[in-house]
Length: 98
Image (cartoon, rainbow, N blue to C red; front, side):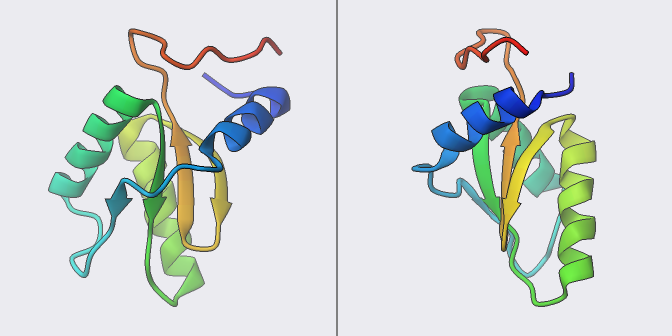
């Protein structure tokens, strides 16, 4: 599933007031962290993840790995915050068309 610009804009608006539900620690991206992100996506559909670190390239690699491992859509990245969306079976967030 690929999001249109209109859908991404809609999700950015919804994500604005959200607090990060996952904070990556010193161990980085472990299987346990991926499982927690997966659970959070199943429950909330739209989440923020805080990826600390000073190395920009390393952060980008970690964020890309999170997107790949969770089959989620990257809505946006603001500094150390990654906003992800993955629709669940219940479809709690109804996306606008096109």
